[in-house]
Length: 218
Image 1 (cartoon, rainbow, N blue to C red):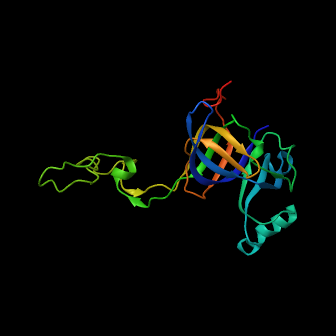
Image 2: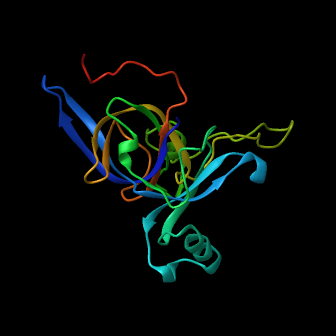
C-alpha cells in the first residue's frame, strides 16, 4: 500500500549510529492527519484520499471548508491535500493516521516550498559570473550581453535575467528515514529538504526503485 502524510519542517539536527557515523537529519512533525473524504473512480472519476493537517481555530476557516470538516466529523485543520492512491480501501472518513505509517529504512520523496528571496540579480539567481574587477570597469554585477545587434533584434526566450528567486515547489527524491518517534509524531529524514522552518511538507513513498539502506547495517 502506498503511503503519504502531511508534516511540518521543524529544522535540522544530527544523530549518531552505533559505529559513530554522523547523520545530518531534518526533523519533521508528520501528522496526525485526518481523512476528510474518500474519492472513488465511480463517483469522482479518480481514486484519492483527502486529508487535513494542523489544528486551527474555527474562526480561521471559511464556511464551505467548515461544512466539510463537520460532515467528516473532524476538527478544523489548516492544510488540506489529496493523495492519489490506486487502492483507498484501507482508509475511512474520520480516520486519523500518524507518522508510524512509515518505518526506519523507508525511502521517501519530500515536497516542499523553498524560501522566497525576493527580486534578485543573475549572480544570486542563476550563479553567473560577475564582471571584471579591474580599475575603471564599472560593470561588476550586471546581466551582460542581452541579445543580437540587428537580426533578430530582440532578447531570446529563456535568457537568464534578474527576477523572483525562490518560493517554488521542489521535490527531493529518495531520502531515507532514519528514525520514527511515534510518541511525538516526529520522523528524522537523512539530509536536507526544501522549505523554511514550520513550513508545510509532503512526505510520500519514493517513485524510484527502492535501494539498500546507506545508514542501517545488516
